[in-house]
Length: 180
Image (cartoon, rainbow, N blue to C red; front, side, top):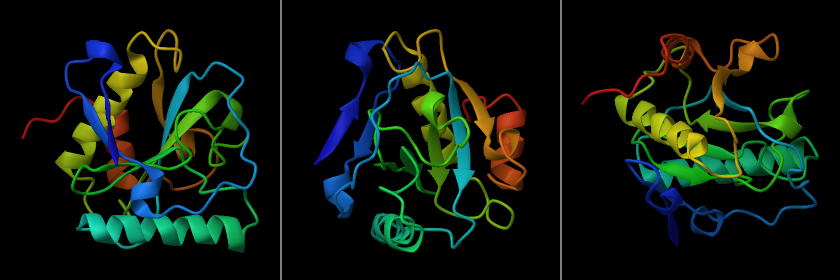
């Protein structure tokens, strides 16, 4: 079942998030809950194929989670949230669990991954709208990011090309709400 994120009407454009159960997530194996105030939303990309349907996106989530848990021995998929090229928002670890993608800042940041490679694929307008709304949701008066969350690219924390050229250019450009 999907859940509506609206902060009790505090944001202009509510988000619909596809929950873990909907995409077939495996159980977590001990992920830590957040204990600190989060100050950042960090963008990533999978650096893989661009998903073009919700079915492909859910399959990519299952594949990524399997790689992280089985291949790397992590407790869960590394990311708190994911967005696909169609603008769908999918729950990864969710809002309550510390991510595993932003070391050494996992305890003070959220992570959102784009299901595609923005070195070669576009960072779509639909995805940009969803990330913009997600940041708006986190900036609203909730416990998630008191005082607001800054939006950063993974490369701002670690030496990497992630989140890809096109996603990072949008972040550097002020991550404005795109117009259709």
